Length: 119
Image (cartoon, rainbow, N blue to C red; front, side, top):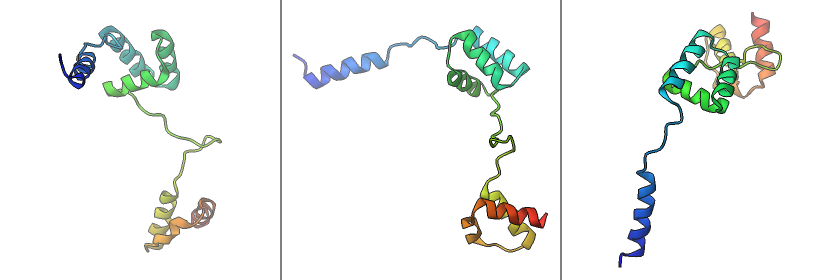
């Protein structure tokens, strides 16, 4: 009789070596890619997810793997682009031509006021 550990290992390995069905057919990928390239928006991704019965994240992952997905720019609640503190500090350091490592510890609101005042 086989060793119990060897037997269990063979059972586990048999499952991992099995061929898994494709999540997306070649036709689905071609159609998805063509539609997204024609109109690269979040609405297109949601429509593709509904059309193929997949999640939005799954469609985004597939489009990313195909190299066609373009991430939407991050914006604040008001619709303005997100500005990081490091970018504000870099602007201030460039203006004064000096490096101030502790300036990053200031609040973002204070950094923004400084940048706005200097602009």
